[in-house]
Length: 157
Image 1 (cartoon, rainbow, N blue to C red):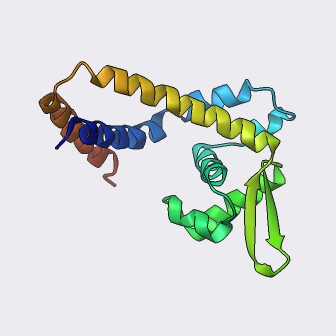
Image 2 (image 1 turned 135 degrees about the vertical axis):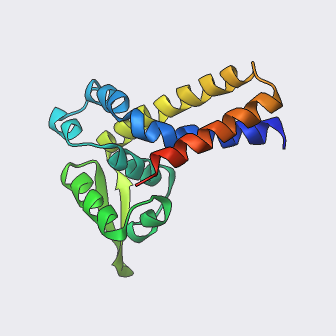
C-alpha cells in the first residue's frame, strides 16, 4: 500500500475519533465568530455542522439526498434541517416545476459557520500531513491499525 493511501486511511480514522472529541473546540470558535445572533451558536452541535458542510459542498441538494451522506436517519436529518432553517442558517426552496422535493442552501450565517468548520478541518489535516512525514510507511501501517482498534473500542455497546 502506498504511503499516501495509508495517510488517507489514518485521516479517516482520526475523523471518526475527532468527531467525538472536538465538538466543543469547533463550536467555541463558531461562538466567537461575528454572527448576527449568538443564540444560534448556542444551539448547534456537531451533527448540525456536518449537515451544513454537506449543503455547503453541494449545489441543488435535496433534503432527501443529505441522509445518504451522514450516519443519521431521514427523520433526524429532517429535524436538523428544520432547526437550521428556523435559525436562518439554511434556506429551503422548491422549484417551480417540482413542488415535491425541497432543496436547501446556506444563508450568509450558514456560510460563515461552515467556513469556520471547514477551516478548522483543513488546518488539522495539514498538520496531520506534516506530522506523518516523520513516519515510515511501516510506522503508518501500525498507527492505522491502532486507530482502527481504538474506533472499534468506542463503538462497543
